[in-house]
Length: 73
Image 1 (cartoon, rainbow, N blue to C red):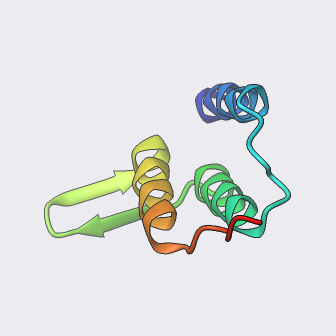
Image 2 (image 1 turned 180 degrees about the horizontal axis):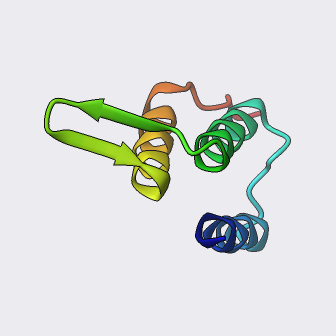
């Protein structure tokens, strides 16, 4: 329930800021983050454990840095 509430606020922000969710890069980031959040995934690395919103935030930041941006027309 908590993740759902935050997801709705995030989607509202994307819509309000007119983010093009049909662009492949944005769609990929949104779908991977939603899958990680809804799928209740977790990652353990040494003493650090990430799950839920913290994992989704880290994954979104990494994807945003790694995936190439669309070329301007």
